[in-house]
Amino acid sequence: MSDIVQNKVWNKLLKEVQLLMLSEPLMAPFLEKSILKHASFQSSLGQILLQQLVLTDLSEQAANKIICEPLYLDHRISQCAAADLVASYERDAACDTYLSALLYFKGFQALQLYRIANWYWCEARYQVAYYLQSQMSQVFDVDIHPGASIGEGIMLDHATGLVVSETASVGNNVSILHSVTLSGNGCTLDQRYPIINDGVLISAGAKVIGNVVVKEGSKIGAGSLVIDSVPAHATVVGVPARVVGRPSEGMPALNMNQNLDC
Image 1 (tube, rainbow, N blue to C red):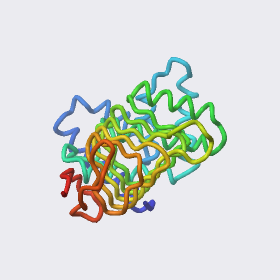
Image 2: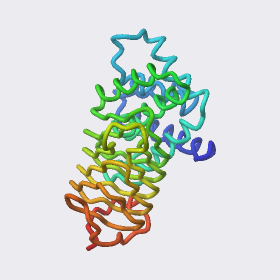
Image 3: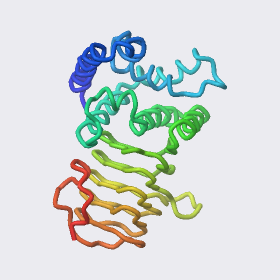
């Protein structure tokens, strides 16, 4: 997502804050600290993530540097965050403003903390990456390994209990519900983790285990166990999962229709 779109998201957030301050003036100090005192989306996002961390081991200054440095050195992080924010607003029926997702939706916030941890992982600063992963698990009950690869336009709905293991790969415009596991099979060092392609919808409680590929536009039903690769534009369900039909949409993740399409 480009800087132009990111700036549009930021301008929309500022307008939403102004309206909220008129209707809920008691929230003004919180909104000032989180949004209005910041000159950019990157700065505001960094502050909001900092407010979620359990700062028992680091000084506030050190934590601020750990969170904000990647946001300013790699604009791709905030571009992806803006795309994720748009995804939450457009796909989550309970999300009525961009502001709600930014301030309160733990799936969105956990995903952005992963993006920062992934930056440190790619810089071979593994201990910082692990520290942020630990914070994510403690604060949000979400465990995304910093070595995983996750695209943009991702919606983590509820997110509680989500596990994404090292080297698992998730494409763009994917929607994942709570209690989903994307995990490896075995302890060898070769590829043992799943690959989720673009536009896939993974419903609540689904488990995708091992070196399998879930191809684009597929849908995985709630509670399913996927241990074999899934063809493009297929609906799978069951333990173990089997193809039961085709999604009625080309990209099921975009409209969150969880019918089985049998």
